Image 1 (cartoon, one colour):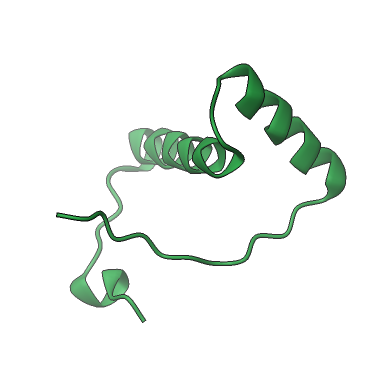
Image 2 (image 1 turned 90 degrees about the vertical axis):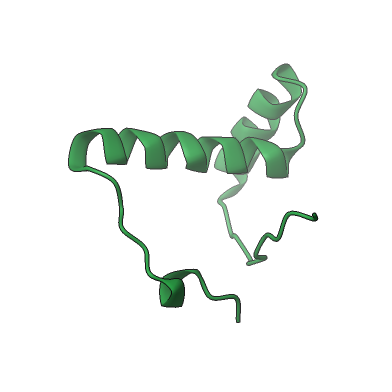
Length: 63
């Protein structure tokens, strides 16, 4: 079963982009995979402090 992912545009300033690129290269990841990993890590950190974020089917719906 294929994994469904949403797409969106992300704008970064050049220095943040360059830093993420360096981190991704060091960890042998693509920039996209590195950003996804950082987002997941931040969600986990947030939820460990504030509790799990409850989502409804409407929140998850793909437009």
